Length: 100
Image (cartoon, rainbow, N blue to C red; front, side, top):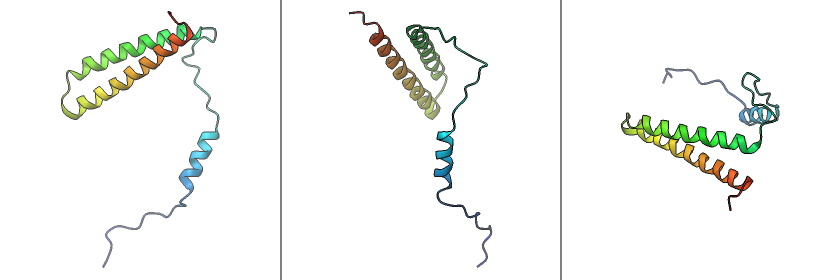
């Protein structure tokens, strides 16, 4: 029996793991196009992140009202991840400056 397509090229089974290892040991150099001033206080950074996450949550929720089916479910799942990140940032703010 003749096969309609050729066999895929053979690859070493450990190649992806080796590439992953090489990628994880290579230092990451962030872009300097958008740079946050190094003297900004952690509390200010967290407060800004909290506001940004809250805005992203509202935008995702508003946009989800225009979608149906799986796309709506996906976007609401993304909104939930945003809300969880917002909660984590708020907890970090509370840990820095308890209002107690």
